[in-house]
Each structure stands twice: as C-alpha cells, then as structure tokens.
Length: 331
Image (cartoon, rainbow, N blue to C red; front, side, top):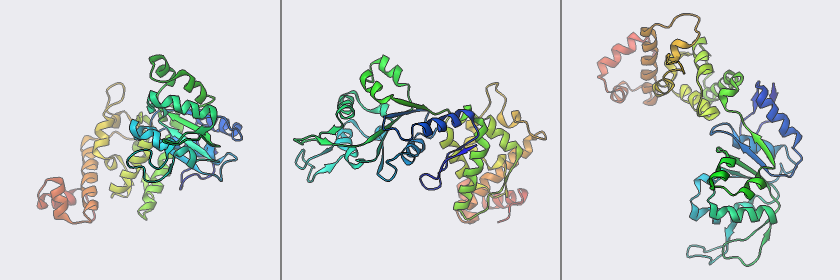
C-alpha cells in the first residue's frame, strides 16, 4: 500500500491497486521535472487531487497552485480569465486584471477540462506554451511567465484531434508526460478502503463515530460499477452519514435514489440479490430497511419534528407514528 502526504484539507491518496500504485511510482519518478503533464481519466477519478500531488511533490511546492476548470468558462470569458486584460481594454475593464497564468507565476497552473477550450483559444494557448509569455487583452507588451503546466481531460484528445476539434500541435505540447488514471471499477481493491475513509470523515463532520458496515453492503459497493468514480463514492458516503440513524450502515441506509440507480448488474439480477451476502435477503427485510432509512432521513432533516417529517413523506402524522414503532426507531 502506498500513501502520499496530506494534500488539500484531509485528502490522502491511498491505494492497494497495482494500477494506481504504478501511477504513484511514475509521479515519484517525475517529481523534479518541469515538463508539462497531461492527466487523463473519467470524471471523478481524482485529476484535481493528482494535479495537487504533482505540485506538492515538485520544487514549486511553496509557490502558488492555481486550478481552473476550462469547462466552467464560456468562450467569451476564457481569454480574459487565462490571460488577463489591461484597464480600458473593454467597457467593464476599469482596472488591470492578471490572468491565471500570471497568478500561477513560479508555481503550477492546472488546466482541467482542457478538452473544453474552444479552437479559437487553442492557438493562443499553444503560443503561451511555446513562448512562455502571455499577452493581456488590450496590452502592448508580452509578459514573461514561469509556470509548470498540468492539464486534465476526461476525453480522448487523440480522437478529438482526428475529429478536428482539438489542435494536434497543442496535443503534442501537452502530452509530454501522460498520466492515465484508472476508473474505480478497475481498482476495486480500493473501494472498501476509500468507503471506510469517506464514511469516517463524513460521520466525524457530524461529531459522530463511524458505525459498522454490514457485509451485504460491502458486497454491493464492490459490485457496483461506480460510473461517477471516487467522487460518486464520496458523495454516497456523505449522504449515508446524513441519513443513517440505525447504528449500522446497511442496505436501508443507501438513499432510495441510489438504489434505483444501481438497479441491476450486467446480467439483470438486482444488485442486492446478486451480492454474496452471508444470508439470503428477504424482500420484507429490504423494504423495512429502506423505509427506516427514509423516515430517519426525514426526521433528521427537520430536527425530529414529526409533523414536518410527515409532510415531507406525504403521509399522516398518525401513520408516521405507526411506522416509527414498526421500524423500532428511537426518536
């Protein structure tokens, strides 16, 4: 198992997966490099955390780390955000504004979602990578920069080059040190460990000790494909901490929306039945777990007010009281 130093907040990259360990080994090899890095991987695989790790392990670690998601910037904004502008360059330019390249001077600039940069801006971005200078909008002189570039993409840039939506010369400028991140379904060795970490952190945020997790739920977590990868697992664990009131994390603690999304495995068998549980799962037990979870979540949301919880659940208060007793909930 490899564990990195702490990154942002309490984020730690830990892995039992040989594929992820190979990634970490490669990052150790290149930690002194100044070359551009291209991190590839599906959404939620940890590109931002990996970029921060590259920065923290580099000689630039005491200098700024400036992340920017190109997907969040419209075509009209991306030029001013990346390259900055001079006062008077346009109507609202009442003062000089440095771009992200200048803000990252001496450190690392992480250009996530680089595939979303429009073709019209790719030419200017290529020029910056080649010349190591930026031209502000409305400026008269090129500004030299000393920046390590790390880029991230969720798409195959080679295919985008073939489709004519990404410049080939820019791709080669970015793809000097490629770092492919495996999806969570290809590093299942890490699912239980990551879930334990996220549950502990989420319950700690509520000043509660992390409860035990049933073997059945562990099997479901291992079988699920996690299309949202680590981010989805983290969000699920946070929601469980917000809604679990039964003292043990079980099937009924999974949000109903997630159960519907999990649906069935590739063979069409419901995941809760396909899981290799120590004992068969009775339908009535599963429904009671689900009902307990929903009632508990509603009560927790309204600080135990039964009338408001009944409104949230679209049932009468008397019905809610009956179901609370049936589920053995302590209110």
